[in-house]
Length: 85
Image (cartoon, rainbow, N blue to C red; front, side, top):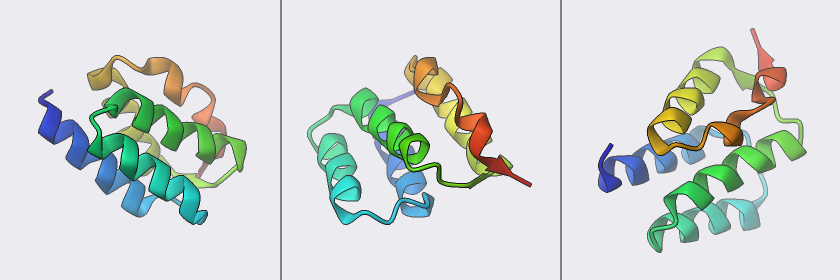
């Protein structure tokens, strides 16, 4: 996966994520802009889990695919617990 695509994918996921805290959104954006893609992805996933935010199965599948592409499988561990159908 190329860097630009990873940036775009994380920003797309962030725009759809159920995270409402502005500071968290700003942190993820800042990490993407400075090139810390893995950390941005981990931060996105961590906050969704920490705040027990419900996500769709389709959203989870997108997170899972990106975690594989980024080599960050631990970032999505336990996020399946948040999936609502």
